[in-house]
Length: 556
Image (tube, one colour):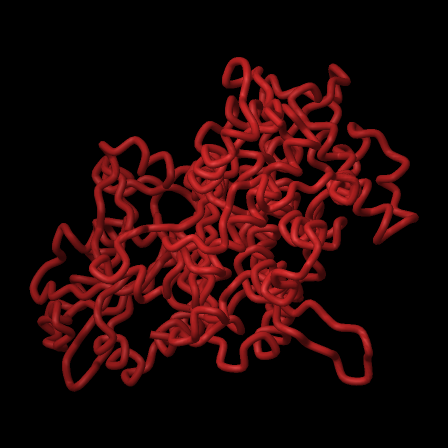
């Protein structure tokens, strides 16, 4: 497949050169796909050939091999009618009653295996084309009539829109719809990594204009905000109003990728899930926390240095950033971040472009084409993405350090799928434990309660949380009514449960209005687990008031 992709790129970059007989034979042996189609048409041009021409124009281009059966057998066309076939095709594509707009390409007559064939090299069209008043698009090796399917037709027009979605002005979007805390979050980052950065002296509005994600109307003088401003800095309710289908999904699966695809082995589809409908700055931050929670932290000491380097962060920040800034937000489809026990898989809707061919790719084949330059610019200011092409270089640099036998798999289509294997699928259960769990085992039963809670809050906790933790009073084990002689749970599980319930008590002492959902998030635990713990603690704590406005109180 990769050989085919390479040959496809070569042919389109060198469209002025004729295809050789050897290349034609090679394509006839590859089989039909998104960018290749076989047609017999031995005596006359079939209606389906023009439908394929239209679908290739509307999708990402491709080649039609005329005189080839569906199974790839080269049978040729009637040599006495080859010129007429060619002339009929040229006449039809110039006929405005058939094609609108009229495409431009020239069929090529060739001799292959002593048989006469035609090659139609169809470019990726700049516009949306229709044939016989019907719109055709390509899906795999099939031509799809999308005329009567509004969602598919809209997706086709969005793909061909010359104006990127992020650049479009959002009517009625104002500064009140943007989140000031997100702007301040960015300033706080820059104050640490770039103390002299101009954003530190700019207002929220000035930052938008400086990054070209907003502009002043030349006539009215009013500030006009683009979709990029909403995506990067919007409040959640504003994003829900203007982009109701926008969302990111982070899922953790306590299984290998192979087990996940075998329902008989692993029927549960996920073990933890976080749905994010917040702006892209917050999404990036939450995805890095999700990564830190579920991916192993490999120890690495660079040569000639005494300072440990976080290879996990170096590697996966590139993958997360690419997921965020290279998605096509016009379609409304969600972006997915899957963490399995052996690999990470990301999926995001993408805008097809001639710069990056469709199908299976390698990292080296990825072009430096930026799908959302405005989003990339803001991420670059925050040092979340670097120079063009640096993401690929960094993955190639850090992936072997993280896992020597790593494997990257990429498939580019209407959905861009990136997969990186970071661990052997048969690795022992303990090897994929979170950093928190590994550190907790080292501290063991003899660690102080403060140490144990610090592990739960982790380095992503705010300074307020960490300082409050040190001041929190501890409850003794007998107050939690947990016995180490419990016959229904092993000792390790009891210790973990005791630590978790100590954490619940500590967090409630800090904030009597805290919700069960917030407790679960801070303690890296499932919501059902926390609710069971709260039920076990009913002799110590009690919830008073309504579900939204109530608070916790201590009974002892």
